[in-house]
Amino acid sequence: MADQLFSLGVAILLSLVGSVIALRLKLHPIAGLLLLGLVAGPGVLGIVQQSDMITFLAEVGAILLIFGIGLEVDPHTMLNKGLRAIVVAVLKLAIVFTIVYETSLLMGLGLMESLLLGSMLSITSTAIYAMMSKGVSNEKDLLVTVLIIEDIFSIFVLAMIPGLGHVDAGQLGALFSMAVSFLILVGGYLAAREVLRLAVPFFIESGNKESILYTSLALCFILSFGAEAVGLAAAIGAFLAGNVMASLRGQEEVNNTVKPFTSIFSSFFFLSVGMSLNPQWIMANPVEIAVLSLVCIFGKYFGTASAMYFMGVESTAALGAGALMLSTGEFSLLIAKESAAYGMDMTSLVGSIVFITAIFSSISINNMALISSSIERLIPANTKTSLRRVSRYMSQVAGAFEPGGTFHTVFVKELGRIGTSLMNVVIYVAFALFLVRVGELGIAAGYSMWIEMLAAILALAGIAYEAPKFFKSAMQITHGISRAFLYAEAPYEDLDRKMMTRSVAVVLLLVASVGLAFVFSLLMLPRVFFYFLFVFYILAGVFFVETIMTAGEIFKRKLKEKVHREGRGAGGLKTMLINFILD
Image 1 (cartoon, rainbow, N blue to C red):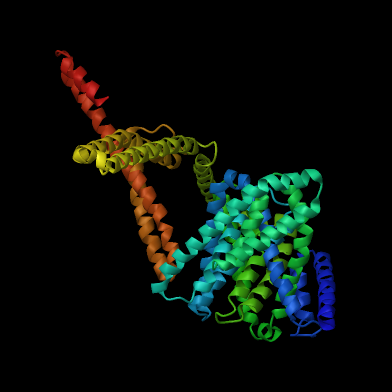
Image 2 (tube, rainbow, N blue to C red):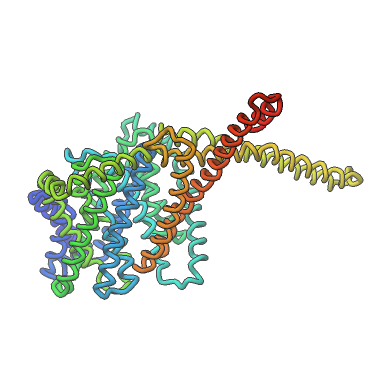
């Protein structure tokens, strides 16, 4: 017991010293904790050993760390910046993943190791960003939403790691089991939110902060236990628990009460990771660490800056955002610890990269203006003009899909109508089934055939009545998507030009999907990349429908002109009748 208490006291002291050193060097405390854990741990000085107590506190710290991240999820910010943030996050993750994945394969690493490294190194540290971005970021809401999406991606990766070694035959069953488990956990999440929506405001108004702390910790550990009990990672339960507390009234008070507690325990996690780093492995593999660090830094800077710029962010702010998103941190370390069974020493590799990217992130933020101006000077003026036009166009398209945009307004209205039509169809069919059931009863046995016919007629009549309204709303949504893309710069198109633009869009989208499929196969990228091609197929389908509709409009226009010419001076009745039918 005395040895464990001594180790605990030294660990707390090292956490303090590591944080102070990192802050003096203008780095995030994570870097200091990793460095102190490495130096004081069993691999170098051996001052502190990995005891059961420190391991347990580190696991608790990891759970509370993710709980704290869940607390920072703001649903309103995600809705307002939803589409732009999704596009930026997907582009950035895809670019970094591809670069790291291909580099890992070229370095001779295995397929599983390359997949894991691509996933780990594509994630930016939310904690380091929060510290580095104070007073710097002009696009803080957008970047925070991007980081939240990356955190959700990280949770998904953590959940998938236990099943990575399964054969293909068992993957579908494993995915189904995971989906069922997740639904069970979401049920607990919704129940807890409804109960706490009444209790937490009462605690806040009474000034009882201890009750808020106890409630938050209890919910965190209960949902974490629930996640593990149904076969999911404890991190998923912790994240959902944090999101429950974030959705309640008085979320700021909850955050301020819980944050100091989560900070203390999360320090044990980073210190424990530092202690588990293998200095011999690090010294034996400096080239791999250096190459993957540089590839990670380049991919994050280029991926973030280009994605932000094409979503309408001004070039200087986009380049600055790239500098803010360089760091690798907490989720990467969590995934590395869970991936210990797959090949190389992931924890030592990722821990080293976390330290290196933290240093580069600090340097790049301190010299953000110089780096941005240097890059802008390297781009030719004609290229800048073309890129600016593409950026403006993409920004207008994204704006159409966001709350208040043209497509969003149409989509919300028509989706409500589609929902009403579907609900009415369900009611018609349910009533028909009720009639069939009545016909099966003894009192109406003699009329069962007529009742079944009546039920069938009622169901078909109801479906026939609602189907035109359903398809009309679906066509309005299709037109809305088309207008969002093709009317961004030309809101009033002539029919002939409209026909041409939609036909060209269909061809380009199909060619792009085939080309990307070939590139994905050539680079041996995971199957999930091919799923993104469905976006191209859906858009091609939308524009194809628009092409057919536009061809019909052109045909009607030509026919009207012909009828007008032939009917001039004639009786006029035939002309009026045809015009009435066409209209």
